[in-house]
Amino acid sequence: MKFLYFLLIPIFVLAIHATATTVSSSQAQSAAEKKLSREISRAEEQLRKAIVKKDVKSLDKLLAEYYADSREGSERATGKKAALEKCKAGRLPFYDIEEDRKLTFRGSQIVQVEGMSMIKPGSLAHSESNDLGAEAHVVRLWSRESGRWNLISQTVGPAEEEGEQ
Image (cartoon, rainbow, N blue to C red; front, side, top):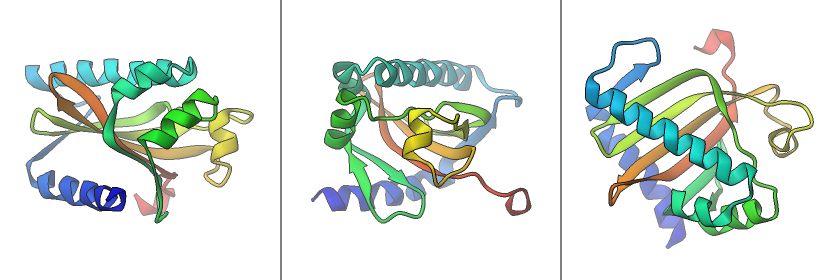
């Protein structure tokens, strides 16, 4: 059954892709998009704090029940239970999107956040992602459920080469 969730998430994302609005930080935003952008920034900060402080209770509230954390190109994903266990043990890295941050609004209930995360030598992200190099491409998908933002998925992959963009 869990495998089915991991298959449904990409299908869900593709199905609503046609209605998506992409906004980079430098583009003009509507008032509604600015509000959503602030809400997502707060949710991202709550995620960072929960992971850094090993606050499993807060992280549990932020992750959707069907949460999936995957590596680009991998056939496997980590679910919510495993993510919470890694957080409790202090082995869950947080990939801070520091460059090329882009929000894609899929209506008012789904927001995709993506960009580049700098992986610092000696950091937990570095030890968990040593095959990625100095930076990683991170994509997070947030969904608003019952008035609260929940993280549906996170995908971490290698940075694209300049020629591939």
